[in-house]
Image (cartoon, rainbow, N blue to C red; front, side, top):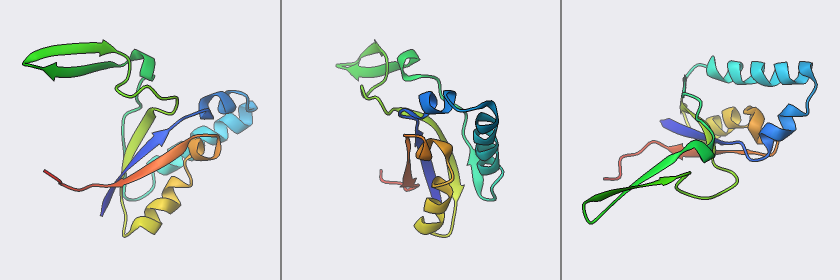
Length: 115
């Protein structure tokens, strides 16, 4: 089963910035370790939500809005794909994501076709 792992930074970036240099290096090493985990396909890092552009089409007209689609503090900051045997295995990997322990969260969604 493939799972899409959405990383919500929340307050994690601020908490991580307050860490010592050695602790920050460990955070980077933890992310690298996840990227090197068998079954993980790393996603590209996403820019900050305030730099987003949202596109809608209404009555055939393309409309753009500065900023994210959903105005929330905990917007998606990154993502990766995990191929795992089951949800429990996906939860184990998600628990290793530094953002999850520094005030953020990881949302796990099974990859499925619904259209």
